[in-house]
Length: 215
Image (cartoon, rainbow, N blue to C red; front, side):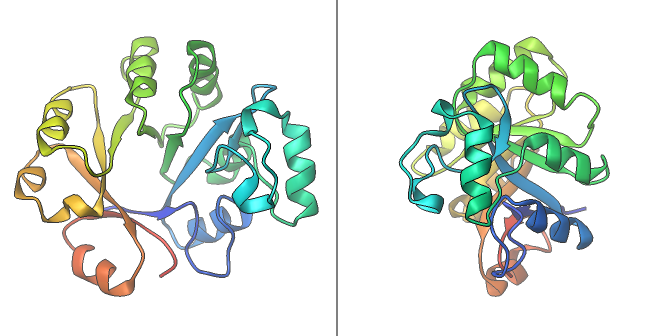
């Protein structure tokens, strides 16, 4: 059975990425969510894609150098409140699947905190393009649900090799790889991102797990 996830909660163009409103709307539609997380200076996990506030708020400050109270104040003033991961977990009620993409490389201490914070939520799967995060999570807790993310120009050979790790639950792959037979033949579960048009969704959704937005 195929599974589809909403990219950053963006089920339609009227919603703002990685916000509680978007997440709630996606859950009402019975979809899982892919979200991104960063750690703030005071070690809070936030649902936010970028390393700085520049793209969304026109401020060049780095997330890692700011306390959550500062980030919340700026984002709330701009009517785009950045939620804590705890907020998302709470509204998910452990009923909806979550891909939690770890954006920066996190320390072992922060990874331990992340596992503790999500320990009661069985539907969390941790993914990252920075595979060191994933391998370090597995060192802390070997049965953690994890996935490795890939984008071009990663070689097919590399993807196949890394997929052989039995502790890896799934691969998160750019849609570029959809047409590659060697990838399609892999037995491991695969999710393809980011599907942005109805024609793409209709073409691939029947036989592939997709991460999509704004349809």
